[in-house]
Image (cartoon, rainbow, N blue to C red; front, side, top):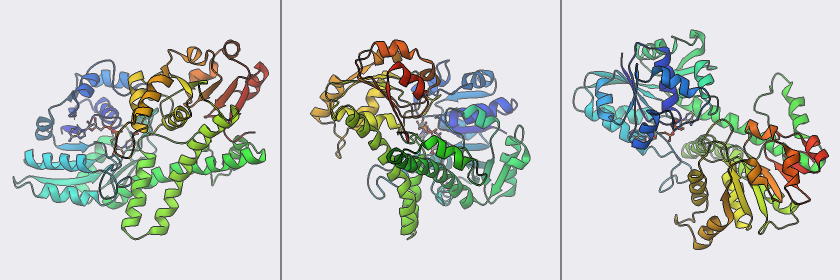
Length: 462
Ligand SMILES: NC(=O)c1ccc[n+]([C@@H]2O[C@H](COP(=O)([O-])OP(=O)(O)OC[C@H]3O[C@@H](n4cnc5c(N)ncnc54)[C@H](O)[C@@H]3O)[C@@H](O)[C@H]2O)c1
């Protein structure tokens, strides 16, 4: 058995590294068109930051784990091919802003069809709209060179920030397909380290739809507690107390009930919008509207947070220094895709605030790129005014202290652990009074900060 994976991103890299670690006898070849990414996978500065990942990669790399740009060779040599390429929301044409852009998946299928011989198992690891496997099968069956294929759906449920742990002890692995022997080939790989009862099998369509549904349910919980956080702020209830009270009901459970400035990441919004598009496609308008509200609520939460900062700072942030702590969409990752910080900062920049931004893992170049992308107009252009605002109003800070020095306010946007243990007395001494803290993740000790003299605003608390 030889494995390859097309796409060396946040999913392809870590999942294949784990398979290679657990199955030292199976050669695993991860390929990508992006040379810089492959170069980074072959170095000690991995392109993906995840706690524990470097150890997993270094154990297997050079033994049975290879990263390269040799896509065709990898396909030709492998018995099982994972497709783990990106499936972003379409930015043009039919289904713009909702449907998944499947051009990368289709390209992979065509390339596999073109160079394959004999029999291969194709595994959809990317998150795909239900019934995509049908299109993949059709493309593969038109190869014309006598190759045969089984297509499986094996969606990935890892969460960024805990990817290694999630891959090591997943709640479940899901394999959808219609060939029992192909399913067993893949199940046998996972069974090397995952108990059999956690390896679920289903038909292809249930498997594809389960991934979209899982993300929709998770995001819905965040939007539900965030909706309640707005009501808490209006009524002097405390959202953490409400979350604890409802979370002890075993039917509800305590996880994913943390109110925040909103969910981010490459998947939740994209997958819900894709679900909405699918429902509309099948004429299920009420179902589409129901799920779309989860995204609308998330946008509201991000907007509400920025507006609160402006209102609290006496209705103007023009030329006021605001420290931004955190840029990644959650702690323990360097991924910034759809991070709430991007949208809160975009709105504050347009209010002419002077932002001093610090994140422990995200590069300055990435922060500037994210802001520029968020400020593009509908024609994809950055207006002269927005360009100037970014140039003049955004400064990168070397650490949290530097960001907060002389700042009117601190906005905490990512829940990095290091923000909890800072010397707040020192920070308070460097800020003009009143010194405001806006805790977008509810991780700071409000009482202790209040005693030092800070005016603290958290989510869902008065
Ligand atoms: N990021 C997550 O937490 C997560 C979790 C579960 C599932 N997913 C899903 O997994 C898929 C991949 O997500 P990701 O975050 O790893 O994306 P990513 O953008 O980090 O990585 C995708 C990689 O595929 C490469 N690629 C695209 N077309 C290619 C081609 N034809 N040949 C070779 N390489 C090609 C790109 O260069 C890129 O490096 C998506 O469908 C996503 O929805 C992501």
